Image (cartoon, rainbow, N blue to C red):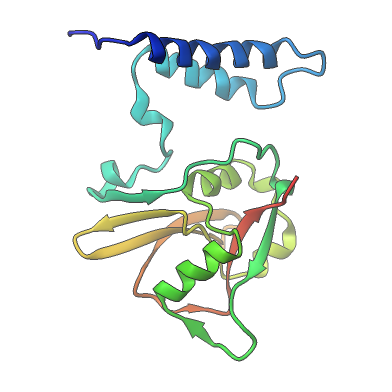
Length: 186
């Protein structure tokens, strides 16, 4: 396999990232994030397995969908307590359609994506009990596409008393029980 040519500028940029990781590892207070996940990501990078950085549930592999849009993960999030739920419907509304839902999620700074949903699934024991009463937690920051249909990830609390992920179609009616999660501002 032929290697890729790396420019001096690219090498310097990557070196700065390694220096930042090293600085964080040497802090007296300890590494502020999940050290196992850091190790796993570094091993994957060394082995050239960059596709694993994306999603635990990769709909491109599972269903042949295309990733249409993704906001990515917010690196400052370190706990489920960093999130809150927000209502996006106005008092007189029973539901809204996709374009309006997208606009409101953006306006409310609540357009997080699938990586955040997967983070919550991994830490579901920390999810507040009152969130279970909600129909869905929506994550419109990731949009998958199959032909002319778009899908967004959603979490719901199921009959097995655990959270699960499904994908809602863009032509759904987004109604009053649907919520979206967003990080608290530091």
